[in-house]
Amino acid sequence: MSAATANAPPPVSRADLAQKARQAPVARFMLVGAIAAIVGGVLVVPSLMSQHPERSWWTYQANFVFWAGLAQAMVVFAATQKLAKGHWSGVIIRFAEAGVAFTTVAVLLFIGLFIGREYIFTWIHEPRPDVGWWLTPKWFFVRNGAILVLLSWLSWRFVRRDTAPDVRELASGEPVARLEDSGPIARDAAILVLAYAFGYSLLAFDLVMSLAHKWVSNLFGVFYFMGSFLAALMALAILSILLRRTMGLDGIYSKRQQHDLGKLCFGFTVFWAYLMWSQFLVIWYGNLPEETYFIFYRLTGAWRPVGTAVFFLVFLIPFIGLLGEKPKKFASTMVGFATLSLIGIWLERYLEVVPSINHGAGPAIGLPELGMALFFGGLFLLSWGWFAGRYPIISPRLAADALEREHH
Image 1 (tube, helix red, strand yellow):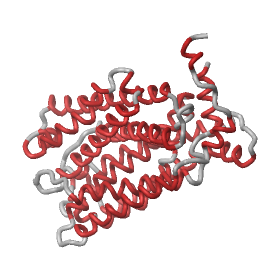
Image 2 (image 1 turned 90 degrees about the vertical axis):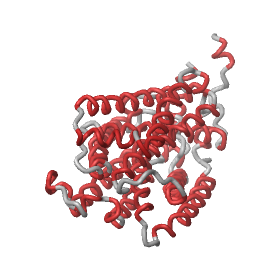
Image 3 (image 1 turned 120 degrees about the horizontal axis):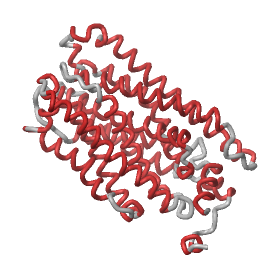
Image 4 (image 1 turned 135 degrees about the horizontal axis):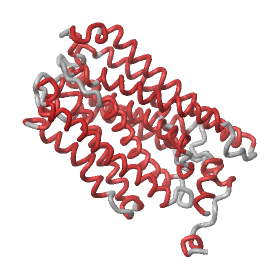
């Protein structure tokens, strides 16, 4: 027997896992989420009710593409684990699936884009004959609304099917087989992953690229949905560490699992930089004015500090910080680097949206931007808490399988 195995804590029983599944800190999430949403609303409402509400609508758009993408990508992460047979994630997979509740909220928040369309979508005032019928208000909102509804439905179908065995186990007290319903679950996961890649590519083109007149990038759809996937991994790392403390999961969510999640965070940080460079290199080498202006406008002048901050926060700092094994396993450093990455990705969404529609002005990050971020973040926490109060927040069968494999 190895020293690591000899010093390992005893395996957690299935009954203990079932008990932990009922102990999600729902009240805490709901309280923090409600406070954040209310404070954010108080900060934003005066600006929205003023004679110049455009600044709040601009940041509404940036927050929508950030939070909707993050929540959807959390569910997609769970789907990828089903397809890749990632047994290591059995303890935390439900933390990711809880993001499904916000996909429904995102459908409702999409109505806000319709209300503020005159301030957000410049092509409404300046029609673009180069894209013809594609950018007409009616078809635009019907199309993107349908994409959000479809993805939310597919996400709920996948999550409900995956949670059903655990719901039956908690109701009956009898353990269910790990592979129960595995075939239909994997099928739903595959459909969801494909729909996410296709749907969020279209959302990226419509909600971000269409704001910049004549700018075209075939890679931007991938860059957007993979950036959202990176944000989901970072958010999941923070959630897992916080829930380990609040739910008493010290013997369940192990350093080894945290290390595995940290390696994913590191790997997709590098992949984000690869996609950024791939997009930048083609635009720079082609030297086409209709493409280069989008990049260089954000890397020079008033927007240069924001562009530099995005590079440091999303890539350079997490890349250096998470390069070794210890920073991934140490909770404080993992949370710290994940938080910086999330801030950087939020700034990236702000940088992609606002310079295209603020009529040549520089960045302005103040109370409206902070308030809108708090409002969306509060709704995300409220929806996560709602899910955790109605579904097992830990899967006894998947967690038991992950822990058994870890001890062997």
